[in-house]
Amino acid sequence: MDFSRTAAAMEKKGYTVSCFACKEDAARYVEGLFCGACIGFGDSETISQMRLYEILSVKNTVIDPKHLCVGKTFWETARDALTAEYFFTSVNALTADGILVNLDGTGNRVAGSLFGHQKVFYLIGRNKLAPTLEQAVWRVRNVAAPQNANRLKLKTPCAMKGDRCYDCSSPDRICNGLLIQLRKMNHMETEILFIDEDLGF
Image (cartoon, one colour):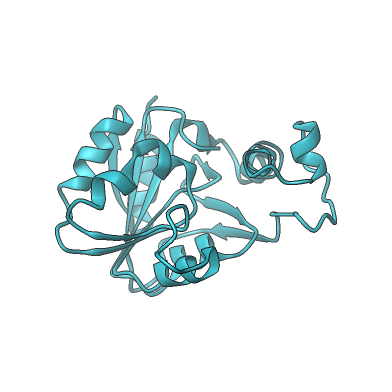
């Protein structure tokens, strides 16, 4: 896939952009950036598919809600990830002109992407691209959220039917906060890693 238009748009907005042919190339690049660092993860399937926890844990301290710290709950581990030097996450959708769109249930992913770190890294597969903001939001609600709810085995209409968002009131609802990030946040270095594979939801 040609990421050039979106990459150029994001560079104009202040992001650093890197492009990779596959997740293995991206993982090798990331591995070479760190030694002795404290790294926090958002709850991301893209990160899991890239095996970054296993790769980065060799030489760094990695805090990942998918790998609970000893004696700590998901909430405690996710909170600790917010205090790391570096934060890795993905997006549910990205527009062609560089607007990041994320939907979150607990808020740890979006909170970590916005403030407090030395640098944030977004890992984005080609399946996340959408032509417009309207289409990106549609993708987030009707593609990404149902698949994620199904992965978590939640009792929501979207997980059980697997077709679309029902704007439900289920206790298991994970669609609580929609973040539309127009540009890079001030005073925080942010790098976008485009990967020419379908990754995550």
